[in-house]
Length: 186
Image (tube, rainbow, N blue to C red; front, side):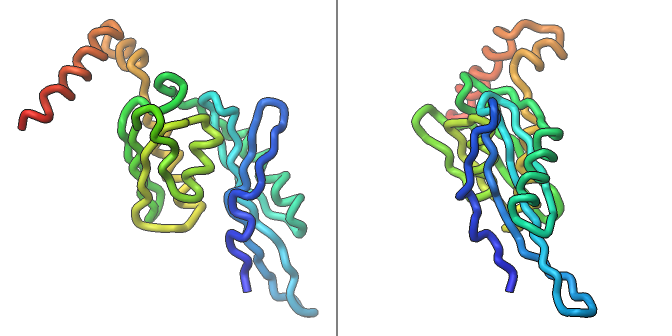
């Protein structure tokens, strides 16, 4: 009876600087004395396509109101993610939430977004153009989005790492490139 995911990804709207994407909408029923009362729950991802992204959950009796509430919640919960060249991530990361586990990897230019459903919405709103990701465990959109955010929160730019270690960015990048050159010889 529940309408799960019919409108998934069909909605994209520009509001000032933000793009919002409807990831999932769910019809829920509350049984009362006179019958059933229907309500709607919406999951929305909001981003500026330049490194800021957030997600929100909203519930209401009507679909547009649930989407509006979810969008407002998403705008209040924005996080900043450092991007490499403004198009991909800096390093591979794993994230999890409940039974949802995700792996996100940077990709060379021209790869595109290789991600399923809810994860794709997050990357599009974030402004990532090239990424490879895999969802393991659950297909529940709420847990997939939360696991993706867990992975994105652990992203670090070379500048942050260099600052924390008291080294220069060039030293950090040269060590990273040197490490990759050693791997194929094994």
